[in-house]
Image (cartoon, rainbow, N blue to C red):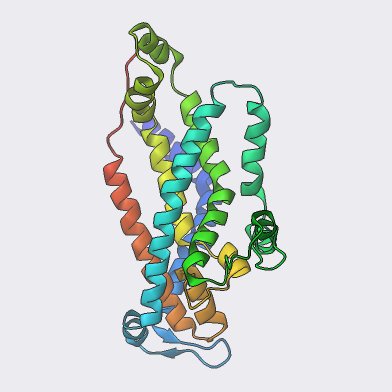
Length: 293
């Protein structure tokens, strides 16, 4: 009995020792920053003077602020534009690229290139493309369109750039999910007379639920936290039409020098993301499997 207990202890110590580097990273770069932000949300600090405890004053100030409310609304609209479109495009592209059509390998590389590039650099390039006077897009169209200075067009334009950037990421994971479906299942469906449409809706799509869950969770979080492209393209304008929450946090902290209010906004964003992620987890917890003899 003692030898078994000693063996368990040694196994546990070995396991924790192997986990220690990852746990250190999680604590230092995830848990500790969250705790610091929570602490800052109850303080008043301008990055220069002393830190002063103000209790819930920052929360009252932010939650009654119309500017922050506008940022939340803009972010929700942005997420509603980006996530469904890039998911549908990524799923359609993955379906085509897994059929072994000519040139598929080349397109797989091209689709991923925007995602691995620096978002800020891509934003600068797209700002030139969408420039009203000498921009490549307006030159191609032969007319002047204020893509980034018209409040009605600025947010869709930024959303289009983000979709273009991230669609390769979505395609990559859907390709992995489609290629992981057992060939025997698809072959059995073909023998039973299932066409391409029925096979997709009744077999492939249900088996993609784990992949769909992962893609939606990561893309929703990414869309809520978008900053680089907004900063490069519009800086939150015009008329705050692209003033997303992440940009508002940045400007509150480093333009207005109010770290306490910025921390509150970050906490609110964290709570929203946790709630949405838990809701997605509850929805996708049912998994579809087909047992093979």
